[in-house]
Image (tube, rainbow, N blue to C red; front, side, top):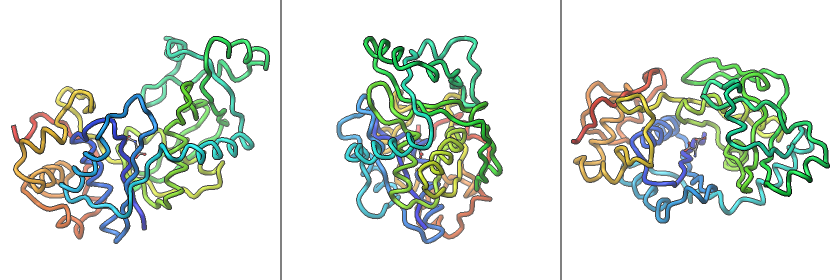
Length: 305
Ligand code: GLU
């Protein structure tokens, strides 16, 4: 059995990222599984020098060990290019010239995660129209989705169903700046690493049906999924790396030990009663998804202040 943690090294990890890493690590280790690390570093605009090294060092400090060398996505663009070619043979890919403002037009219906469902504006462009528009603007590449319902049973959230055309819409596989989209690379890389179980925040629950659909198009296996509740700031916002909301730099200055941090996270998750110091290793034997809470954790007070 093989699990993974796939953070974007765009800054120092915050408590929410570490919460995710802990649950993914516990789930894999409690099944005697391997645990792999993948640094999702494709988006150069978000990269931050030294962030990958710090991320690895922070995980080590917490006792969340991984097997082998981390996978790095920037070295794999040829592989993504090939996957895109295969998808192009089995589904319709088309250039999309819509601007952010076009996509967020007030009338657009929205998916459950708040992103607008693409109206299909560029799906029917003629070759001449594509050539004409390409003069002024670099297009993104979208894949046309069928009117098809994808369903799966999440280990933590239960049965999930999504109609791709109605609830997701045609989605981007390569951005207009040439960067391969997360939805594509996550599918290619989880398969390349032989991942059997994906553990991640439930903000990505609505992405999973389209990822499963891509797996089928590419002839790749579908791993098991466990989406966990998020840690939210007191006002209900998501924690963000940009705002240094309790990031690992701050935490390591204020918390007494890695065990103090793990104990707090485990208590939030519902794995232990009180936030007492505990090593991650000590939680492995008792770990079970049925013990993990289902509702978000609201950080009304940050510990260690
Ligand atoms: N890099 C993505 C993130 O940090 C990974 C999501 C996933 O685990 O699939 O949100």
